[in-house]
Amino acid sequence: MNSLHDLALIGNCSVAALVNGTGEIVWACLPRFDSDALFCTLLNERSGTNDYGFTTVDLLDFSHAEQHYLGNTAILITRLYDQHNSSIEISDFAPRFRRFGRLFHPTMLIRRIRRLSGNPRVRVRVRPAYGYGARRPRTTYGSNHVRYVTPEFVLRVTTDCSITAIIEETPFYLQDSLSLVLGPDETLTDSVPETARLFLDETTRYWHEWVRSLSIAFEWQVEIIRAAITIKLNTYDDTGAIVAAVTTSIPEAPDSTRNWDYRFCWLRDAYFVVNALNRLNATQTMERYIAYIINLAGNATNSLLQPAYGISGRADIAEVEILTLRGYRGIGPVRVGNQAYRQVQNDVFGAAILASMHVFFDKRLVRLDDAMLFRQLEALGEQAALAHDRPDAGPWELRNVLRVHTFSSVMCWVACDRLAKIADRLGMRERSRYWQRHAEEIHRTICERAWSSGRQSFVATFEGEALDASLLLLNRLGFLNVKDPRFIATVAAIEKELLRGGFVFRYTEPDDFGVPDNAFLVCTFWYIDVLASMGRTEEARALFEKLLACRNQHGLLSEHIVPHTRELWGNFPQTYSMVGLINAGMQLSIPWDQAF
Image (cartoon, rainbow, N blue to C red; front, side, top):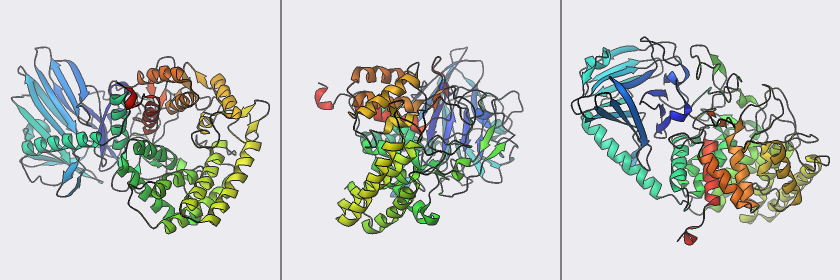
């Protein structure tokens, strides 16, 4: 049975794949993140000889497996052992490196298989599907390749393995090594072994150089580096979009029907991703995302932004249920698309302006036309000023209830506050005063309507009584000082009601699908940040270590966790969770100059 605790992510910012503990590729959407899933057994467990939607290298008389990432890379090493002391090694990766003066990151996955010891007998199986598991592709082949033809994409597997052995899935003794290049229907310019070897070496070099460019804390370096590589793999270089996760429909909890497609770009989540990468000095992703945001703002009708977009920037990501996949561990439904794109979420204006602020303040970035960009952002600010006290679906995307959410209103305040700072930076004093007046008015409104005198804390909605974990961000967003008695009281209220078993729930009130069963991992990281800011450092460090122990064997986290068993649930790997790890680790680590 597939488990999130065994999965590893490979990719190159064009494509991504998930590999299980025995080297089976169980999830890969080609030719890009939001495409049809050619390999989909993550959501359709294999049950017999006629299964398809996977690719694997089987070692006959299999005994056990070992698996790890090649240090500081996105290259996965799987070692399989049989009952006769024979063994093989599989190197799985997607090429990414500089070539011919540009970054080379093709729609391609490579599997390099070599004999380690003994006389291993293997079987190579390549069984893609299309229509989300509905059908097997038409197959053709040549002297050194097999073509799998689907309506959307032709997958060409070029190899130095016997073509007959692949088509008929015939076992054979592995004498030395072989490679499989899974990509578009294009001829390789060099031999398969040489291509695989060269691409592996160059991809290794790329990731080592990328990691060397990071500015990381002294403590938890391995954990932070793995988190940084992971969120990098969730970025789509072609447009600058950042997906929330590479999967769809992994339930937030068993039988909850909270099964959503996360292969899209949420403006809220993506801001936190680029902010974390910027803290690590990975500025290129930030630049590409800012360009994505600017294009969305330029194309938006009446400066209205959706909460989520396709990775191409397309607005329509309509949600449908897929009946051909049974779901993760057989738990459906499986959904493609996400209806959240049609929701009103008023925090999006603040998220877009926060991300764009770097253009005006970060001297490392290539300068744009500041005045023109500022005018575009002002149009978003006007929408934020209008929307700050209007009902919306909120940060948790409630589907059937609209309220005036405190977090959304705070993000509208953020939009106006940051526009005032940008205008001041540009020397536009009148515009700065204009936006500051809006910010002050929104701030007063929030303090009057989102503060509960009965609870003596801020609450999730205007004139409400319930709490939610987004209130932990009031200090990080600059709305309240960490020493403000109102913030301290709000944190105490959250500790009393939302902190369970050491994990913070996003909320505990019933929603469209009942009472939440599992904790939302990033909320616990927010709580750690608050503890550290309050000077409760030892508590923060202990809880951070607890969360690190919850990562899977490859250092990855999903969206949700069962507090009492620490089992991971929800789409995987979740960029929001990995961002929380980076931010908390960077804040809690001792400085380099105090380490020795």
